[in-house]
Amino acid sequence: MKNTNQFRLLIIFAILGASIFVLSQMPITLGLDLQGGTRLVFVGEETAKVKVSDDSMAGVVAVIRNRIDALGVAEPVIQRKGRDQVIVELPGIKDPDRAIKLIGDTALLEFVEAEWAPGSESTLTPEKVKEFYGADARLDKVSDIKDGQVVSSRLIILKKTALSGGDLKAAYPQVDEYGNPSVGFELNSEGAKAFADLTTRHIEKPIAIILDKKIISAPNVKTPITEGKGIITGNFSATEVRDMIIKLKAGSLPIPVKLIETRIVGPTLGKDSVDKSKIAGAIGFIFIFFFMILYYRLPGLIANIALFLYIFLTLAVLSILHSTLTLPGIAGFLLSVGMAVDANVIIFERLKEELRIGKTIKAAIDTAFERAWAAILDANVTTIIAAVTLFFVGTGTIKGFAVTLTAGILVSMFTAITLTKMMLNMMADSKIIPNSDSKLVYK
Picture 1 (spheres, rainbow, N blue to C red):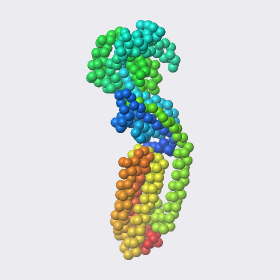
Picture 2 (cartoon, helix red, strand yellow):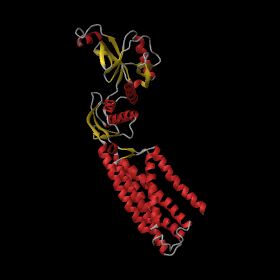
Picture 3 (cartoon, rainbow, N blue to C red):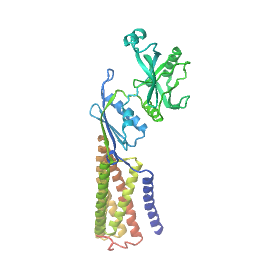
Picture 4 (spheres, rainbow, N blue to C red):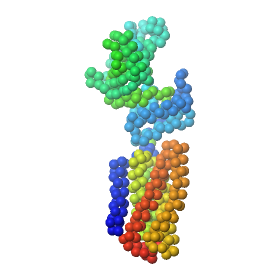
């Protein structure tokens, strides 16, 4: 029996130690309302070819999500609002400029046939350009930028688009022959064929590489490029190269989006809420602690220990699930604490009834847990059904509330049914509670 109790004690300490280890290695991510961050609202804009619709907005959300995920923001919230808006919440992001540029750019990559302009802007009017080079031809400039300053520029005549970013197979960071950060790319089979045809007939002429209507570079073709690989050079910083790759990999937005709201949420409100939640939780825990001991005596103390384990175990589960803790999530957690206490109360009331009819302490414990199990299961299953419904129909923080509540209920069932029973049996087996008439139990 002594070995059995030692084994039970080892299990309890192992659960506590594992929970603390998980929390130390995987701290819980705080949501936008607790740690601050950036909230952006974009609106989709129609184009001549693509209208604002459910499909186009779903595409916008998917592309934005891919870009944000690649940016490495923990637990972002990206959701539709109304017919044509998208809300983006980025916890921990205090400088939104990079995120705005990364999200808002259409990321339309084009490879355009081009020629260097033979004259100056004063002599090459748009009408002359169209007359000599075709109806789609237009005049533009290729600028040489150093340290953010335009040091020179050269006129270029853009003709038709030969291929686009839709033909990209891969994009990756690279350096050019001077060691400058550049973007390497690889085309799919169709794109490689089109690119080979383009470079074969365009020897000693430039091909303009255009991203979001801005000329990135316009290298002269020296030899045909048939393997479908190339490099986009320019005066890029390493960050610009990373962002460009993110956008190219995520694909183009199906329709342009316009930023209509930027809100920086400071951590002050969140910190105040967390502090108040800690105080409220501490007060509630103290009341529960003394009530359980005064009313149920030793079983009440055991329930408090189980509740202590429950708190660490629930937070560890939330960390493993990579759940983001928000204010509604804290509410869900505190609600589940109440349900954990409730489960113990149901068990101890059953224990009182069994002791009053004269059963031995071991028999009373076993019967109390058997009779309490049905009531605990019914109450918790109905709550879990409600939480699951909230998860599937709710958005953002409502989902966080549902996840926290569900995890808390499942853990509370484990601690109440398993750990509390284990500790009560330890008390009975070690004769700390010698019999049903012991003053350590209330009946």
